[in-house]
Structures are given as structure tokens and as C-alpha cells.
Length: 217
Image (cartoon, helix red, strand yellow):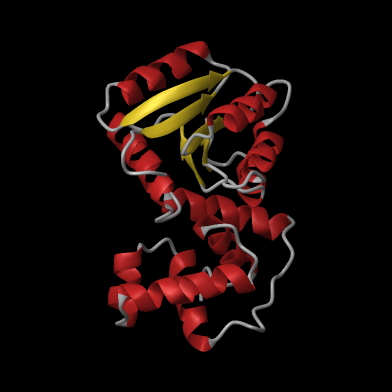
């Protein structure tokens, strides 16, 4: 994302009223604009490739191509936009799969306007997974059902400490304070974790932490 233009958002939702409401909210916000709207998952993939938005707001339940498959295709691009999944229910079974497909986080459709705008900015910056309390509950429930166990053989003790706090949803500032490390040192640890765990972004580090059993560690 560049700094000399508004943050660009692609809306992907088949509910016209909801989509128009979110479009008007975003377009009325300084420094943010909706550049395209998709009504199907397949259209979202096409528009994401054509417009290269910073953030895609993706309804998890989309016609033609569901939000999970669309997210996987969109995040396979280089560079890839951040995908923020929208869901009506906080225990939607598809959300965990969408995040494994490359989504950076998820929010509920009943989110307040200020929180939605904050969520978009947060995901665009790659700072943290959203709605951590709901996310923890949903991911933990999904993992208990089907996810494989992940080993952390190549991860150092300090990197493991960082991963535990990332998994718990702490921000960079909170992790720095908890571990008494600098921003530069934290970025080095996170970069190493991304490489070692083959994670695309911070959201996938959270998934990796859950798979390694660190959520309660």
C-alpha cells in the first residue's frame, strides 16, 4: 500500500443493501475509498486482479465461487491484497478454512462503523488479527475438530515466546512491553517465524500457534 493515495478497498458481498451501506461508509471516510464491488466470488477474483486493492472485504458465503475459494485465489497473487472475511455468525465453520486460505482476519457483519473502519486499517497495515476474543474461540473449536498438530522444531525459545503472544492476539507494542524488546528485534523475530513456519502474514502465524498448541501456553 502506498502512502500518496487513499487506501483502496474491494467489496465482495451479494447482499446489495449491506454492500451499499459499507460502500457509502468507506467513501465518506477520508483516506479510504471503494474501488470496485463484486457480487460473486468469481467476480471478486477478477476484480482483485484488475484493480489490485489494498484490502478485500469478502463475504464468506458467496454465490458462484464461495468466499474460501475466492480468498485462496486472491491471496495467491503477488503482491496480494489483505483479505478481511465477513461473516454473519461468529461460529461460522468456514471462517477457519478461509483464514487458512490466506485471509488476514474476520469480522462480524453487525460490527459498528468505527470498528469496521479500524479493522480495515489494521488489516491493511498487517498489524494484528481482528476480533481476538471471537477469533480465539472459533479457531480453537475448529482445531479441536480437524486441524493437524504443528511442530516447532526450528523455532528458537525467544521466537516461541513471540509466537505465543501473537497467537493470543497481542499487538506489536504489547509484545514489546511484555518481552522487553525493541520494535526492530520484534520485527526480526516475526520475520523469522514467517519464514520458518511458511506463513504468509500475521494471521497465519496465529493459525500456526493454535496448531502448535500455544493458545493456552
